[in-house]
Length: 328
Image (cartoon, rainbow, N blue to C red):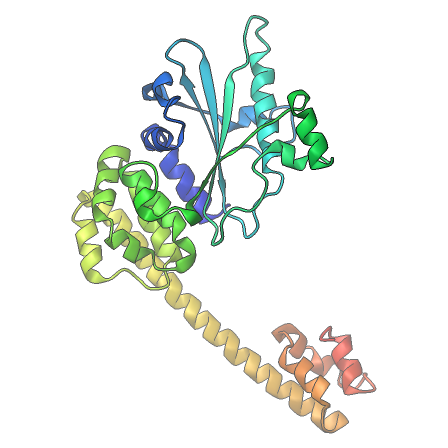
């Protein structure tokens, strides 16, 4: 991604403290006390892509079992208009790579590898969550052969179907999930305003960078700027250096938006002028345009419109000229 959603997710959940509370709330309650989440350690994701051409997980963590041994947790952030139908296969490839590395020690046993998929599309996750759903065989055959076939089930945390009050995690991590859940609505400042205590807790638990990352995320995806009251309320929670950083970014964003608006205005004026000139030339050369030619002209790009004079004395008809410049 690089998408702002991925960037925010990695920035926040790249902090072990953020993922610790998330895992506490999503893993089966019987498993949580068996894992020592206080020793949750991030691992480089590049290791799962050393020999296999696979898409790497966004985050990879390791945590010890209290009775000995290690579990590995691959965390994947999915923001797609249509969920990845092969996600279970991707998870199996990650699992196999982790196991291959473990087997380099002939005395080692297979570590447990869990793939957690956090998705926040506008619609609920509808893709397969089990490897067995991908088998090319009648369901009855898969069911009968189940003991002999590899199986893998994803942990899918679908933010589209979980209310804000039930989202996992604590403080800033929970606020990040709230923002991801509502990203498509374009009103993230309202979500932050409703959850300022979570932002304040995130500052304390996760540090400044993830918290500033959430403000940057809201700036990028909100349709309206944050109002003065909210801005002062949030900035009062920051130390002077961080306050200066976020205000500097805020003003740069305002200038960029203003310049973008001016640029769009200039492009629009240029397009109108080019279309007027093209229409006058075509009408003088070929007479009144057909409804089809008029519609094609209205949908033409600026570059195509500005190419009309180059073809005006060459093309035999208006339609032929429009085809020559790529409008038809």
